[in-house]
Length: 266
Ligand code: ADP
Image (cartoon, rainbow, N blue to C red):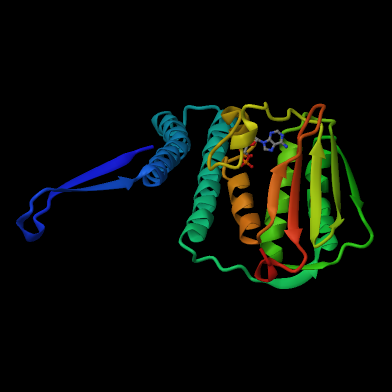
């Protein structure tokens, strides 16, 4: 623990003495440490694409007219990709900062959970096919409507499903299932991909945490997706977690309250 000690002369009715105030500042230090780490991460993540953009642009300028057209095109492609990546990072950061500052209200309304799951499945089919993945969808028949911010919840589901596609080698299997359990609905996304080593599992909902930075970058990842997902699910008083399951790959589970966050009793 980190303690802050404050000493002050104490002179009540001239008896003299010293006043000692002990403050436990462990939490403050942790928050401050996390903030510093976050700023360092942001700077690093933005600097990498900027450096790439600069060096490719510089090469194009220095060799204007001398480079073979296909090389020019490839360099311009890198510049476009890197600026797209920066846009994604900035968008994700804005989303997080709106959450942090409390400026992002949830738009709560009833909607069909199973329809949302189906929409997410459909939206990802093309990308999954591009990687030769087999995607199976299995939903229980009696899933009720739930109260929540549909757009945000779909964002969470999209993130988890697109991760399953990204982190599974071509020709993999992805299983999306959903159902009801008491006052909750759940969705699970299971893949047979590269999985996450036990040591990294507790950390993957942290901002910028990535098991393999190079791989994540290559596939357009920012390392912010799951932390945003967790933020959204937390605000709904739901749960997002990794399921302990033997075998290769990863299973992510999302649970949400049927009645929505405002009706939570505990
Ligand atoms: P990213 O933008 O890097 O995909 P996320 O926050 O969505 O960031 O995920 C954090 C990290 O968790 C990823 O970089 C990856 O290392 C790991 N991860 C997420 N989903 C999976 C999965 N289905 N299989 C293996 N690793 C995964």
